Length: 384
Ligand SMILES: *Cc1c(COP(=O)(O)O)cnc(C)c1O
Image (cartoon, rainbow, N blue to C red):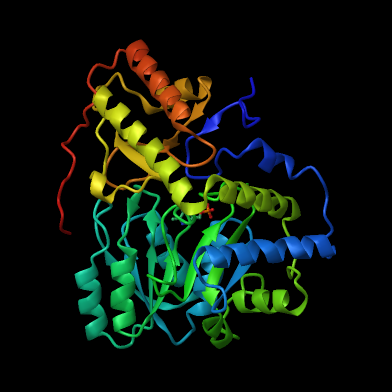
């Protein structure tokens, strides 16, 4: 049975996510990669993305084939040179993944880590930058999708700028829904992808980088296909992708951007997700589930819940039951606690969240789960 988006289910996940029917329909034609129309489509997408962060005139958008991680790896490997040193602010899997990338490509780095329910420590960042003049770059995840926590990006940017270092932001799961502008945040690069809050289909990531930094990065890259500088130069030369572009994905993304603007851009999208998130958390709390994060640090992107301690609760059968009811949720990724996640993003509205809540209520009753509290009381520690 197809729903209004032309799917047989709703993806309550952090991407790929539920896309609109029109976005899917935009893929029903073939494009040549050197076709003038496709070149102009790519150019329009890039311009809109730069405009979204108020970067026209100073920043360039460089799309990269592949998933979001490809864009992160291209940005880190190109913008952080072999003689540079990075400081990574980590409070989840995606922060750790940046460390793994730097390990593999051989770039010097240190890590400042906070627990997964605690935002990055800005005071410790300041202390570390003041003591280590060798640090050239700071990298951070805007919304750490592991838990759904939002990091204090403006405070981090202010400190990085004060100490004259460069900031790289993995804004993958926040871009287009959480405010990010060159007016408030001074960044060298922001990385995101087609299939998160902008509600396109998966197939490319993109980096919005300062043009001056891209210029300085010539020759840094560890890789041919993930050389952000060369990719940028390729677009500057003839408007074309260096290697086969994800043509259909770009066409779908252009449509998704039109719908984004028609909805009312960032403000409207943020409001819709915020409403989804509030409805979800309220409804789950009413059933006795305990969210992993304090509301003050919860981004309206994805919510992590503690798994109930009740032995009658079994994640696998819970997941299967919800999938039969056409709601796809996400397993937990926390290192310390049994959990699961429910996303608020994509072509999902309050009525769908309410539908998912009703299905969850039915599962509890069928499985005989009466107590949804977790094993251990949730950590509320504010320090590391
Ligand atoms: C989704 C995501 C990525 C990229 O993941 P891919 O699976 O490579 O698309 C990177 N960082 C964050 C914070 C994300 O949410």
